[in-house]
Image (tube, rainbow, N blue to C red; front, side, top):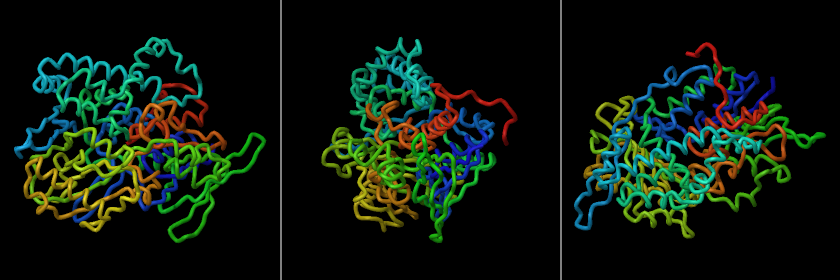
Amino acid sequence: MSRVTVIGGGVAGLAVAGLLARDGHEVVVLEKNDRIGGRAGTLERDGFRFDSGPSWYLMPEVFDHYFAMMGTTTAAQLDLTLLDPGYRVFRAPDAGGAASAPVTVPAGRAAVSRLFESLEPGSAPALQDYLDSAHDASTMAEKYFLYNPFTRLRTLLAPEVLRALPRLFSLLGTRLQSFAARRFRHPVIRQILGYPAVFLGTDPRSAPAMYHLMSALDLDQGVSYPQGGFWQLVERIGELARDAGVRIITEAEVTGIRTEAGPDGPAVTGVSWVDVDGVTHVEDADIVVSAADLHHTETALLPRGLQSYPESWWERRTSGPGGVLVMLGVRGPLPELPHHSLFFTDDWDANFDAIFGAAPSIPSPASTYVCRPSATDPDVAPAGHENLFVLIPVPADVDLGHGGSDGAGSPDIERAADAAIDMISTWAGVPDLRERIVVRETTGPADFRDDYNSWRGGMLGPAHILTQSAMFRAQNASKRVRGLYYAGATTAPGVGVPMCLISAEIVLKRVRGDHSAGPLREPVGEESP
């Protein structure tokens, strides 16, 4: 048994703590905030409960595998509801001010095929080919890339991988936007197929076409919702960790990773941390896993000589977007909005140039994501009210400022929130939306920096461009300090809750000395409650 200290009680930190505890280690989690969950947070006010982070439940097989590794099942832990429709796409009114008809994306391949055919006659066969390709890419990624610690070259020399190399090189060398544009003409179809890149922290004009696998997730598998929201998921992962013997200490801010020199080089000995009263503590450990932001871990918690990824390395990296989050409690029903909605601007390039270009600014108008969980979950809003979560991708720039309550945030943040509210009101046909808002909370890039130590105030982490994906992304173990490992969205395999769960398993592999490429064999035993 080793003593393990995990820095950060977000999804990745809780997941890796649980896996290592079940493997026989003595584990403590130190979380700087007063709650667990990290960016998968929650906010409660006046009877509303908002998820303040992830809200799309995709890649169900990753959750199934993680829960199996913890000795239980998804069905035992979560109450999932398949959403139908999956989401709705809204566009700007035409030049004359007439509303554009929204496009409602149903659940299931057959229904989506009929939708595409109605938008672009003759496109159904192309969609079938596209989704088949996406499914193949997703299967290949899971077997050989996502769970791979990339510690042995032979894991990439499997016959199946070698046979697929020409196609893999083609997908890696082509950009997602052009990949979709070659197959479909309708602008909304192209946007539906390109926008998942934003959830990977990048621009569809820069994301490798390999990421068309995302379309197999929402258009083929469908989108589900865990009753109670993603906060329920966080609570279940946290409880499973505690059940495995993990100690979780909140309001415990780690100030440094302690090391000592040895015959094989520097090795971890523990961490220093400060409690809510300002008292300094030392937590001794044989293994330290940082699930905190990797930039913060490397540049703030380690001395320069022990940094695998120093500031000079980060200067050459591309950040994903920042985010303005707007959480609204609304009086009265909002049947115009399903559980998930996407508001797409017509000038796609201008929108992404504003976020990722040489002169970044908040896009105007901005393509925006809206979640109405009260469409599915009666417990997230008081009776007779609706719960809206609005996400506006913006540049990763802490100078944009903080959010606040009821319009009290920084000017740039509140202007972006106002613009999004007006967009929803006009495009979705809810003219009195602003007057019906009874609760308003906003979050800006400076909050991401302060709350989660996010690099540049980014919402997600390094963008999933080719040079920051798979084996090219920062990996899960320090190159300079023995016993120091990394988990979470800012390291491999990448952003999103499923990727955080996978990163936890990669750390387990590293600790075990397991070099295999795919998911670990699931334990056989008594199911946990």
